[in-house]
Structure formats: structure tokens, C-alpha cells
Amino acid sequence: MLRYILARLLATIPVVVMTSIIIFSLMRMLPGDPVNVLLGQAHVDVSQETIAQMRKEYGLDKSIPVQYLAWVRRALTGDFGRSIQSRQPVLSVLQPRILPTVQIGLAAWLIALVVGISVGIVTAMAPNTWKDWIGSIGALVGAAMPYFLVGGLLIYFVALKWGLLPASGFVSPFVDPVASFRTTILPALTLSLGLAAVITRQTRSSFVEVMQRAFIKTARAKGLHENYVIANHAFKNAMLPVVTILGIQLATVFSGAVITETIFAVPGIGRLLVDSILSRDYPVVQAVVLFISLMVVVANLMVDIVYGFLDPRIRGN
Amino acid sequence: MTSCRKSLVARAQLVFGRFARSRLALAGLVLVVVLVATAAIAPLMGLQSPDEIDTLAMLSSPSSDHLLGTDDLGRDTFSRLIHGARVSLSASVAAVALAMLVGVPLGLVAGYVGGALDEGVMRMLDAVMALPPLVLALTIAAVLGPGMINGMLAIAVVAVPTFTRLVRGQVLSIKHDDYVTAARSIGAPRRVIIFRHVLPNAINPVIVQGALGIGFAIITESSLSFIGLGAQPPTSSWGSMVQVGFQYLELAPWLVMAPALLIFAAVLGFNLLGEGLREMLDPNARSR
Image 1 (cartoon, helix red, strand yellow):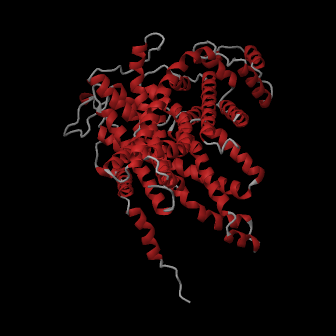
Image 2 (tube, rainbow over the protein chains, first blue to last red):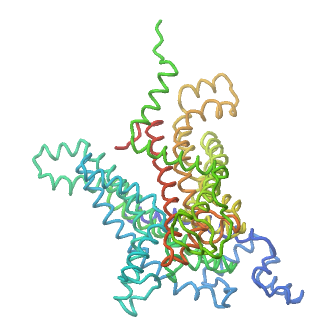
Image 3 (cartoon, rainbow over the protein chains, first blue to last red):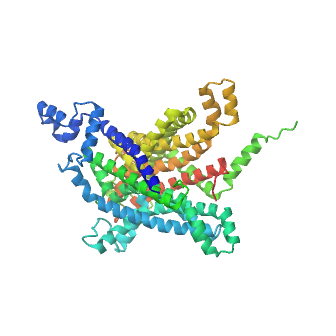
């Protein structure tokens, strides 16, 4: 098992390196001089000598690969430069935004997991009945609903019309757990619908396929109780493709967070990305995208480990 | 010797029959056709002008004058929706077409030639796919600048890896088939083998993914426009209508609901169509 984990860890390194190269290249492709980009509006007032000095300071007079390595070295020490907007170190701009996104994202992912797997199993166990039709149509519909529709409906009815929950904002659980819970629900529900829909469909098809396999017949023939057969034999095997999907969904959560945080005015990473792109605060954009991709890689690594735990064949026993 | 090959008509009936047997697929087809047709004939429909500002009728509710009310500048929502459909749908279809144009040949060549080229391409794709789709599309759109065409390019870039991987997978299983070996043995050039023999047999999942990809493109395009990076005024897509609408959610909820529902309908339609195409083109696929 340990060897498997180490192998997966090592495999992530080339991906991380390539992703960082892509991010770095994208930022370098921005039109105009990077120094102008860094200076923002002020570049017209600054003298040529200062520009030349800045160029040297940021290493922009060196070749691109050298610049990339310098950027990596600085990044590893946590130095992502300063935000153009606020002149604060980028890392300090990024840090407080992590909690809201992680809280809402995790909540959404868990809701989707529980609802998706439950509905998936129920529909798989009762194929072509009304339960199946509702579940499957619901999944198809849920997967197609854009975040603005779900979010818009939730905000309009639950927050504005009925006044049950706040329409926007975020409160840290360390400040006020109850308020934090109340500000998390609507965004988490909005985010979870699409995820749950995908999980439901995958669970259903996976279960249907597993239940037809030979070892299930054997277990039943042995006289084992049906619930035991489902729980102990079918479940683990059926969950394998679902775990893979759950991993992919961790990336989807970040995509969804961008829109959901904008709709619900949550001060998270997604909205930071949007705001910094719109205000051309490129040092922040660079750091945020890098951070998001790192989190996705880590999340996928954990999913791989769970997968290895579930399926001994993968571990290479 | 009797031929056991069915006539073209009989084979077509078999294939389209598979599609028609699924009510959901037919529903999807109907949705898509209705949306596309409406968008196509929009200028001929005799609607009110989508850009005509009427300051006396701002944010009015649905009425006989304005079927879906008006927005904050008094512009007719219904007409804006239909004209917005042209923008959203054409941008999405174009983005997917572009992604296929780049991704399919890339997958064909990488899969057939194999070796270092294949490895290199796959590593690149892994890195691109490591970024969440909307995040990547946003970043590319940020680099390219606001505008519909840049948004389209961003979506296309995000969609390429899916097609490339799909085709490559197909090629890997096809390239050892007998007819390919036969073509190689008579000395057919690689170019001919790839495009005349491998491609037609690899194309089915690509068509399915194309339909599903349009659904993805519609959602991504509307997200980009919602944020402010896709369609720029005066061009207006469904996404930018939603963005404006959210400011008035309490006063005029239809401004958000109408375009959002249409986006939903379009995505649902293309998703169902894609599923139907999958049934039609690959009935052995593991499904219900």
C-alpha cells in the first residue's frame, strides 16, 4: 500500500510541473510589457530608468526559462509578488479566501455524495419502476441546470420571498457557527445539484452492472441475505467507478465555485479569481490558478489512495 | 452466392430506429431543433428590436405588450432572448467545431504514430485537464481579452483534450484491426491509412461527444458572459442577460429566470441528443 501511495505521489510531480509551465506561459502571453502589467495604470508616470530597474529586479531581462525557474523558486518560498490592486503580498490576499471556498465546496461535495449514491442505489435496485424514472429524469435535469438557475431560484424563494436564509455573504464558523451554517447552505445546495446528478447516474449504471456479475449469483446461491450481498459484495465493487467520478468532481467544485461565489457574493477563491481577472491583477490571477490546480492534484491523489484502499488489485498485491 | 448485406435503406432504418426508440432522445432532438430554428429565423420573426430602449417601460412585468417584460433599459426581454439565442448557440457550436478540428487530428496522429509524440501529447493533455474547465477558460479569456471570439477560443481550447483523448483511445483499439494491417501491407501511406481507414471507424464517439460538448460550451459561454468576459455590449448573450438580471432579482425575477431557463433547455436538449446519438451509434455501450 505504501509503495502504491509513493508511486501516485511521484506521478503527480510531472503534472504539477507541466501545469505550472502552462500557467506561467499563459501569463507571459498577456499583451504588453510585463512591467507595464505589474505597474498597472502608473506606468506612464514612471521614468525609463525605473522601468529598466524594475525589469532587472523582476528578472525580466533574462531568458524565459530562467524567469520560469526564478518564479518557481520564489513560489516555493511563498513569494508570489504583490497584488497590483492592494499592494499586499499575494499570499496574504489569497489566504483568508480559502476557508469559504473549502467549506462550501466540501459541503456541496458531501451532500452530492450522500444524495447521489443513495438515489443511485435506490434507482438501481428498482429498475424501470417509478422510483427509477424519477431518479433518472431528475439526474438528467439536474445535470443540465446552470448554477444561475438553481441559485437564482433558491435566492428568490428561500432568501427573498420567504426570508429563511441569507441571500449572500459568508460568516466564518470560528466567529459564529450557526450563522456560518446558514450562509453555507444555499451555495452548497446550488453547487451540489449538478454533482449529485452525475454521481446518481454513475452509481446506478455501476450497480446494475455489478449485480449481474457471477460472484453475486454465487453469494446469493450460498444463501446469504440480500442486504448482506448488496452491502458487502456489490457495494465495494460498484463504488470503484464512482470514486473515480468523485475525484473528477473535486475539480468541478472549483469551476462551480467561481460562478456560485459570484452569485452568492461569497468572499472565496472563485470570486477572487473573477475579481482579479476583471481588474487585471495578474500576480493574483497567477497565484490563484496555481493554487486551484494544486488543490485539484492533491484531491485527486487522495481519491487515488481511497481507490487503492477499496481495490486490492490496484495496490499490486 | 447470396449477399447478407442489408440495403442502405434497411441499415439506415436500423440505426435511426435505435435513436427513435428512446423518447428522451427524441425530446432532445425536438428541443434542439426548436431552439436552433427559432434562433435562425429570428430576424424574420417580426419581433420588437432587442436594442430599443424605452425608458418609460423599465423593468415592466410580462404583459401583452412585452411577453416577458422588459429589462432595466426598457428593452423587450422576449426579443432579446431570441436574439441572444443566435449569439449563444452559434458561439457554442463554433467553439465545439473548432475543438474537433484541432482535437480529432491530434488524437488520430498521436494514437497511430505512438511513441514519443504520443507520450508528449498525453502529458500536455494531462496538464491541461488538471485545471478545472471554467478556471482554464476564464484564464485564457483573461489573457486574450474580453469579447465573443476570444471566449469561443477559450472554450475550444478547454474542449480539445476531451476529443483528443477520445479519438486516441479509439485509434489504439483500431490500429491493430485486420483492414489496417492489410492497408499497411500493401504499402498505403500513413496519411491515407489514418484518414481513409482509421478515422471513419473512430468517428462515432466523436459525434456523441460533439453533441455533449455543445451543451458544455453553452454553459461555459454563458458563465463567461455572466462574469463579463464573453459577450460585450451591445452584443448580448443569455449569460450577459442573466448578469444584468441578477441585479434586479427581487424586483424582476423573470429577467434572470427567462434566460437561465433557456440555457437549461438548450443544455438539456443537447445532452439528451448526445445520449440518443450514443444509443444510435454504439448500441453496445454500457447503459440502461
